[in-house]
Length: 249
Image (cartoon, rainbow, N blue to C red; front, side, top):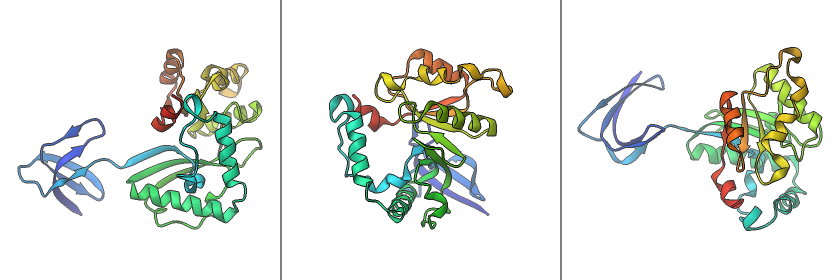
């Protein structure tokens, strides 16, 4: 079914446009854009749906409860993590599921179409669908911190996850051609990108392994030019969180 409408303000993912265009949509896909003089929606904006490449849906209900200053400008990072753990210490599985559902519903209201979620409570497969579940493409990964979790799984970080678990989960993702993720270069010298790569130095050439590639580095507040060059050559994307960067100063 072909639908047409005219918009004046639209964002194509790169820049804002203020000229009127007629948008032709067929079966949910934009098939044509052409200039048009009259605008049906002069006060509305048309823009692509959002992609959230990193979140912890199971912690959504912590919004507004955690300290807002962290790192160099506030509470030390590990003290902030301790505060978070205190808040969820008495949570039940149902509390986590409710938080997960709330996160999905909030994402839908914000116009999010794709989510790459990581969690360590394994609530995804046990959680009744929220009203947003059928409208969002969800990639749910178990997050490894101290103990192994069912695959697909990814490590939290090199400072919180044992080295062998970091290596095992990343290698399994690469072999299965699944995009991996890990928090790196987030806050200080304890989570450098170069230290992450050293974990895999003895793996090159074994079982067809060519190097660390095809993944997400989360935060990356303190990446170097050398780190970014390696990432660019090996299809490793930076998932930058502006609020986190601001907190760390």
